[in-house]
Length: 181
Image 1 (tube, rainbow, N blue to C red):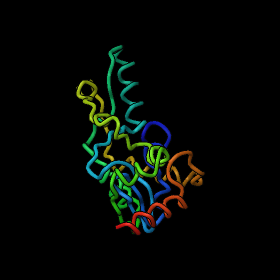
Image 2: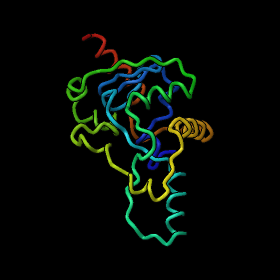
Image 3: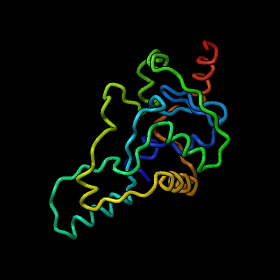
């Protein structure tokens, strides 16, 4: 599970829809579902279990150093997030990538719909965590984190999430995009 709320980093319920939307992508798991970034936008996550193991290791070593731990595992981009989720969930998903301009035209709501889409901070997902890796931070494969997040969300009954694009708004956004292209 990535750190933070699951709906901020990865909405596992997107996989229950037929399609997905993304800034740069109206991504589809069937009919329409929101994601964030252009397909090649870098994204950094850390599984909270890996973070906890690293922190405990630093405590046991009496190491009071400062470490940046964002995204030290395999390099991923937004396309990887969507494709990994589709693969892990064995979902029949298609993706429709849309322009940033299209989403900006939707107004301030677009940032709420796609919380990981941060075009105003172009380097936000490019942090170098080499110091933490050298100190022992180990990250599990991203696909494992996605699979475990999906299983966890199903186990807890898939409650309504606080962020992201609703299925209704997604359908409307996809319809608007397709009517223009």
